[in-house]
Amino acid sequence: MMKRFFTAIGVVAAAFALSFSAMSSAAAAPRVPVDMPTPVKSRIENADAVPAAAVEQRTCRARFTEGVNHRRLAEVGAAILEVIPADTWVPVSCERGSGGEYSACGLTSDYWMEVYWNGAWGYSAWSCVQDWEYTS
Image (cartoon, rainbow, N blue to C red; front, top):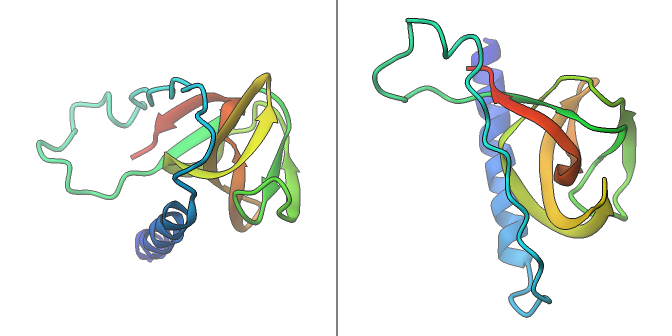
């Protein structure tokens, strides 16, 4: 039941992220590329029971270097749902998405992580990601 629920959330999130990409301006000022951290294998993937073909939905988790705003949309002016404390592991999308440009944790970026925190999906600054890993 939970797998179907999270799969449905993932499909909705993907459609939402695609709508943001379609709306982004091609004439935006060039940004300095920021290297995206590569998710590390979790304890689950390090087990001997790793499937030969990756046909399952992936799930990930991340934690941030400092407290970050959990926003309704991937925009600086979007409503802040709550603040996620530093070093708190939270369920996240396995990919970063584009949104409004911001400056946080010493970087300027327009990449956001879709984050599940206290019963709600929202967005937090990708530049503040400390660790990021696959959980399934």
